[in-house]
Length: 104
Image (cartoon, rainbow, N blue to C red; front, top):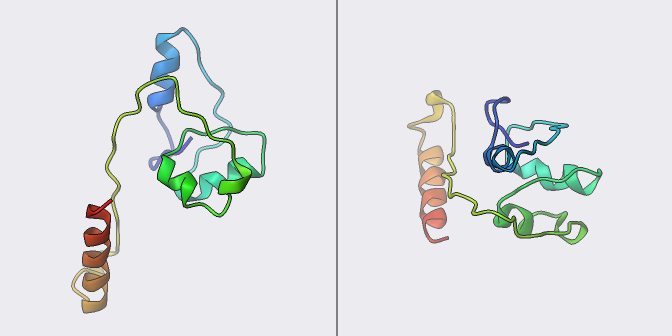
């Protein structure tokens, strides 16, 4: 389960609960980017954004399926240390990321 906070339940858990089911969470990770490699090298499954899987070096080792439920949209965030907030290079990179991401 991808959980930035390292705890809690996710959308999959809510959907399963409504059907009287549950899942066993074997591993919690704080972000999506390592999930494809973990799944590709194990017998685990994960519900991941399509773009994360498509952009992964493990893409050819993964089998993908559409979930049998409507996945809600979510917001991606970027974080950096407050000390670096006003550095020109950091500001330039942050603005570039926002510009590119807004076109996706």
